[in-house]
Image (cartoon, rainbow, N blue to C red; front, side, top):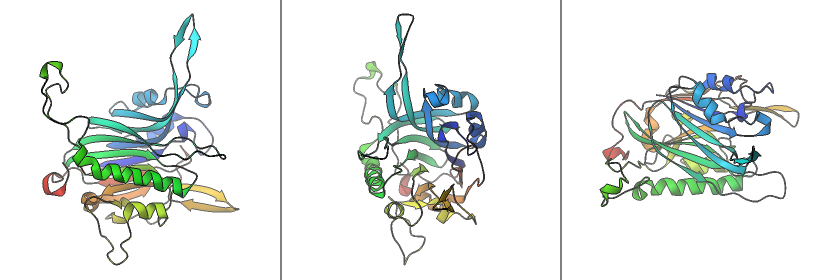
Length: 305
């Protein structure tokens, strides 16, 4: 299956032009799309409802939007309140149904300067032919490694509790007349997970090592309840893999800030990982991962369910 993660910079390209349709064209066709920096009702983007616009541009997808930042943007018109929220967050779109979702508000440190905003991780459970998988679109803090480490620790704790906690509901429905379950079986909350997004960290950093661990004498090691970097396990590794370019101290810095991490049981299913280097629809380059989610086998002993 084709996965893509894209930090859209709310539709502003590397050329400074606002064009959300251009960003939509970049990701169109993928099986699962994780977007970051998607917003609603901001003056800088004409008060656009970007999730709604994207859903019209990408008609063949189920979708969920998760706002990390939420402020009132209501107004009075003709004697009534027009309720509106100014939001900024992440989004998941999938050609397969999104069975359930939840939004994780990540730990945040209050700053004196510079501006710091709330970050979140949007979790979506999708039943793939391989088995159920929890797909995340997330955006970590941009200021300090310490804050990102706290956010990663939170996500790892949630990940390891997933199977024992269950999904949106669990147990036998003892009041079927109230239709809590609509007659459906208990939804899965599998260990199998994929994290995609803007991590604001580079390979080898303390935050990166917190996710993948340190196995210097056992390269290729993968823990069942841990994560690996899809790029490191790809059968077809990319020669030049970076997702962001910026002039820092007078020099061009090419950094890989956007990543795809897959659960240990998915490591050998990664076919390729790359970035669309030079794409100008945002200030980041999209990350593309081809992974075998077609072949059954994630459930049972592989820990998918």
